[in-house]
Every structure is written in C-alpha cells, then in structure tokens.
Image (cartoon, rainbow, N blue to C red):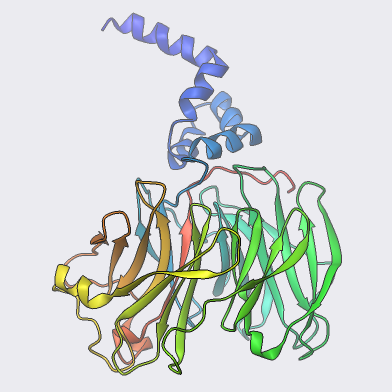
Amino acid sequence: MNPKLMISSAEKIGNNQDLLAQILLRLPAKSLIKFKCVSKQWLSLISNPHFCLSHTRHQGHEGFLHPTALLLRVQCVLSPEFDVVPLKHFSQVPFFHYISTPYLNILQSCNGLFVCETLDDDNNVSEYFICNPTTKQFKKLSFLQNPIKGGEFYVSLAFDPLQSPHYKIIVVREVLENSYIFQLDIYASESESWKVATTTFETKEGDCIAFEDSVFCNGKLHWNSYGNQSLYLDVEKECLQMMPMPTPLRGNRLEIYRYFDDSGGRLYLAATYFAYIDLDLYVHQMASDYSHWFLKHRLNMGDAMEVFPELNLGCHPFSSGFSGVSFVGSERKEEVKVVIWADGKIICYDFNDGAWKMIHDPGPGLKIGTPIEHFNHLHEQRFIPYKYFESVYVFEDM
C-alpha cells in the first residue's frame, strides 16, 4: 500500500472524532489505558465519562456483562495478594497495589467495581472505599452514621452500568449491640447524598442472614442466609422483601458451606455438607418469581476426577479439596458454568453439555493457593471468588 495513502487515511480517522470513538469502543479496556499516552486528543476522549460508559456497555452481551477473570482470596487470611484466574482475553493488572495498607479485605465485586475495607495493624477497620482496579481509581466512603462500638456494620454496592451510570452504596447498620435490630443507610451517586435510616427491621437469631455476603442482580441486592429465609432489597424502590432459602437435602447432616452468586440475571446457590468424605456439590437456582429454589444438579466431584485423573480430591478427612464456587456465563445464554477450585486447579462444569472442563492449570508442580504453612494441608484451604470485569468506568462524583 502507498505510504502516503496510509498517512492520509490515518489523518482522516484522527481528525474524525466520531469515527475514532467507534474504533476505540471496540478495544479492550487495558489497551485503552495504554492509548491515553498517544496524544492529548486520545487522552481527552478515553477519559470522558460518557465514552467510558459507552465502552462498558459495548462489552455487554445479550444484556449482561461477563467477567474476564476471577480473583481468589483465601478465607480467613488477610492479605493484599490474590490468585487471578483468567476467563477470557484477560491482561494482568496490579490489583490494589496503589492502596497503601498491610491488610485489605474485599467485600464485594459488582460489574467492574469493588467494595473494600482496609484494616490497621490491630485489625480494626480504618476505612471503606470503592475502586476500579483497571483504572486504579478509587473513592473513599464517608458515612453519616458511623457503626456503634461492637455493633454489626455491613457495606454493599448496587451498580449496573448497562442500566445506569450511577451506583448506590447500601449500609446495614445494627442499631443496638446484639439487638438484631438494623437500619438501612443508602448513598446515591446521582445526587451525591445519603439517606439515613431509610428502613428499620429486625431479624431473628435463627435466620442467620449473612449481610457480608451480598449479590446484586436484576436491580435487587440479595443477602445469603444459612437459615430458612433471607432478605433482598429492591434498590430503586428502597423496599425490603423476604425470600426463602433452600431446604437442606441431607436430613440432619450439617450444611457446611454455601456459595451464593448470580449469572445472566439468575440467582444460584451451591452447598456442601459436613462429612468424613463427601464430594457432592448441590447446585440450586432461584425461581424467577422468588417463590422457591429448585435443585438444578447434584454434582459429584468424583466424576471430575475421572476426566482429570491428576486431581486428588477427598484424600483429607472432612476437607473435600474443592472450594471457591462461582457461576459464569457460558457460550449459550440459557445455561451457566460452575467454576470450582479443585486441588489447586480451576475446573468447571458446563450445564450446556454436561461436561467437566479445565479452565486454568497453573502447570506441572504448581498449584493455586497460599503458602502451605498457613494450613496443615492444601485441601483445608477455602477460597472466596470475586468476579473481575475489565472496565474504564470512571466515578463522576469524585
């Protein structure tokens, strides 16, 4: 091709802001971050909040965003380090390195933004913030009502950029210590203001609602529970509703772990039971009208070991060797994949074809997990997964 013609074409594109924007919208978020250095024009365009929102929405598929990676954090271990599991066209980013703290705790991942808390050396909460790891942008949260000493205090995020560029911070705050009486405080980024004590409600001790384990899906913030019922918040109407939880399926056997998640507009809950050796994972899906959960599948990890003989599950008493269950979209909209940490590798069960597949193998002799000195056995590790979405979304209420 004639070099002069190439230069002429490049100039035409560079001088056409709309055409340039359409080209950049189709690039991965990580590439856009690098391209900010090309020129002041590109920096201005890529940093524009409206362009950032358009780029995020362009990444959506059939009305939903899909994660590019999973962050795995070891349960009950405070550390700024995470194992990163790539799911698709993922480029490594230095997560949270720009936040100076010895201890970092992720509270929630929500469509590209994270809610975190930092802890000081005495393990007292020092501050809460939301951040976008891709852009390294973060915003410290300030509360109108601070937690009472010794009282329960939980922070969650409701954010769906495919529906709105604005987000809400939801705080569940105990009114009196050990009272089971709570209030909701809600921050709206659109108005940059707090509504304090929008709702007062009381829970029962047997409800065992895990306000620290929240999932935002279809405009509603849902909380996990180890009891027979839980709560969800209609974020737009700011109204609390009850929802049932799955009935235990193993009689008097103790349910030991629940994994609460969503994908493609559906709520899922996976459960394991306490036993000397138990390789079963019970996968439930919430009915669309919130009337009940139905058992979608009883997965047996022994079937996975037949596909992947290198896995050694169930070799340690009362530690099955699998954890970190997450649900991600599959190639076909109607079904999902169950992603599982199993003996240091990442595998999945695809409901489309009923097959076990390898997602990420770190290689011979390598295993995903923290140093063995934290545990007596690798299989004792329990992982909490957080979905990571590459996004150039920027906060407009900074």
